[in-house]
Image (cartoon, rainbow, N blue to C red; front, top):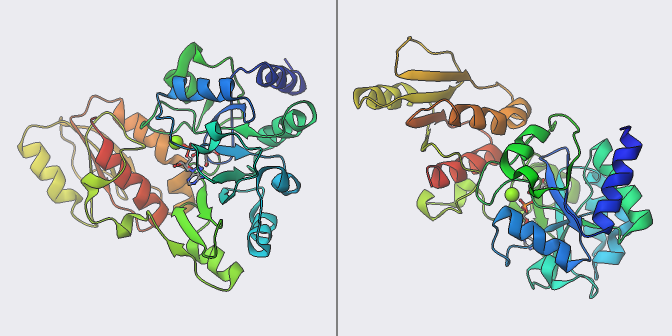
Length: 324
Ligand code: TXA
Ligand code: MG
């Protein structure tokens, strides 16, 4: 099938109220027609996700904003124009026509234009035939690691999805930055590769940051999310060696992600991945690496904490939810 034929099929499925998984630059999304609540209900059923968790509506371009949001401030519009298409979700006051099933009953809606050719082709084609918005969470079971390849989606969701569009590995690799601009303040609700500094420089004022790993004192209270099945220990700089010795001393099989290669060979060290040196590369490879380390039969995954907020956030969530 050519790409055009696949897109045509995907649009027909979405119009018929079926689910289609598609690539974005961040992670794969599990899409449904955002104005069809029966279709949206299938997303919650397939993911096993609580129905009060709102979904992000994906749009083909910023020109569609007014069909989904109201009272959009000039600053919010400028952020959309600057960062879309891209890994940024805007929370805005919802247009009265946006159904409760998408917003979890809230008065706001999450909107994003993804920067991926296949996603944009799908969104453009769907805007011509359908409602123009595709509601899509990450295409994984609730609480598990987000998928960054079509193969991950198939492994997680199997036959529950009518079609998985394959756009290769996602180039960004972690979920979008979520920015609440529905009120007077600008608040980052989820850190991502578009940073607080990127937004601050553009707006001329630093946004507030909520839900950042640094502001969370008790990892146990963290939402269990993005988690492997194997318990995961996130350790500060230079304490990997201590954590490794302790685990080996207890006879535990370990899988490690650290910025340097394994200093020793040991039968209980069943995997050791060298972490990338840059934030971009770390993000791009993180979820595939976690899946790999989760699959080697270790009792414990040990990860050295990287220096970047968005990645610390995902790893803290992984550590809190792992083994669940
Ligand atoms: O990169 C991404 O954002 C990916 C791709 C597929 O676009 N999507 C994604 O969706 O990560 P999901 O459903 O896994 O995460 C969406 C997050 C949830 O934590 C949800 O609570 C939040 O967005 N969200 C959505 N609408 C919201 C709203 N109106 N107010 C506050 N948070 C909202
Ligand atoms: Mg998700």
